[in-house]
Length: 84
Ligand SMILES: N[C@@H](CCC(=O)N[C@@H](CS)C(=O)NCC(=O)O)C(=O)O
Image (cartoon, rainbow, N blue to C red):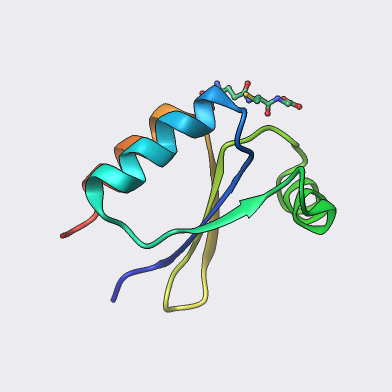
């Protein structure tokens, strides 16, 4: 089963744009969480990771495990590695 993916981002962030283009190209279902428009989302990002840098991908697996992934290049590589 595929993990639930949520991307913490904002529109004018170029590194977020890189990830969003990959999401579109791969046709993936990813929930977008805008950390500028939604302060609660920024707070949960900081509480979980200790950082406010975006993009950050939250990966929730079916077994309940949660991973937070920073760095646009790492996120794109991860998305490209997902089974189709
Ligand atoms: N190396 C990072 C750079 C990410 C980055 O610099 N993001 C900026 C927005 S474009 C940011 O979140 N700055 C706020 C901060 O670091 O607190 C990546 O490729 O994802």
